[in-house]
Amino acid sequence: MNTATWRKNFRRSLFIVSAAISALLLSVSVASAGWGQPSGITEEAERMHTLYLIVTASAAVVFVLVEVALVYIIFRYRKRSDELPPQTHGNNLLEVVWTSIPILIVIGLFVSAFVVLVDVEEDADPEALTIDVTGFQFQWEFAYNLNDLGPGSDPNADGTVSVIGTAANQPTLVIPVGEPVEFRLISNDVIHSFYIRDFLYKLDVVPGRDNRFTVTPKQTGEFIGQCAEYCGVDHEAMRFKLHVVERDEFDRYIADLQGGGSGNASARLP
Image (cartoon, rainbow, N blue to C red; front, side):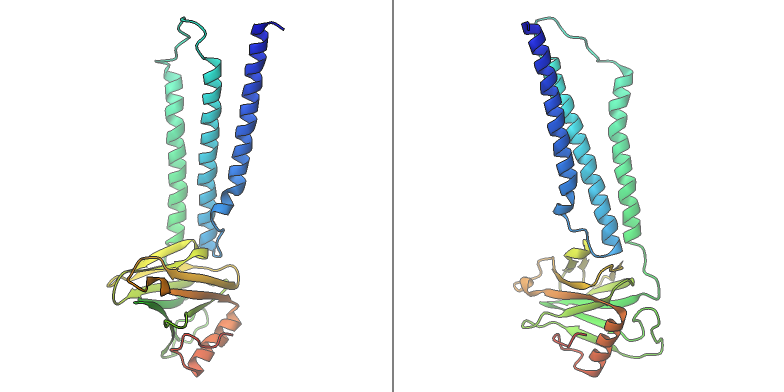
């Protein structure tokens, strides 16, 4: 085998190996994308997680294509003599193609993100359960209006039951599964931030501003929430538990709060 043939085979093998490694990196990147973010427990979180995977996969594809092209060009057009290789400067078709591709990618990602944003920020149904969440230094209060407990609520019911956290006891927020739940965020002192990791969502609790968002939980279980905005010396104490339960369990929980000390963060759960 002469030197020219050996070099040609070496270049071809190197290109194939590089492409294979890049493809492997792409598959690993896409497969592990879900590890970088929880999939979420709400319908809204599921849509946001899907968008996250789309953006991650798009970035991985662009990275692999650019790296493969770069490796190919480096070895295919490396300097062999003082002769200038063929030039593509001024090729209108090429310039249109490599200008259009990034534009189309950006437009596609923008449209996808906008659709998800509109969907996530959609106003709640008037019949949805509404919970007033009050952040204060340094805990939370969760208040349930008895005439606004979701579908089937008694519009003539009067009063509110609430759970208030203390330094010794983290409060527990209980919501029903499979139903839209609207959170109305209130603060009477400083800016807090209502954050539940498994919602893939957080929203600031700002004095004088009525911030709201709606989620529809898809699975039952116990989860953790916290304040995600530094709000003072005991900021780290602003943690709470989230219980997602079946509707009948939720109804029993509300009845239990009505019959017992409704202001106690350790109120008995269903």
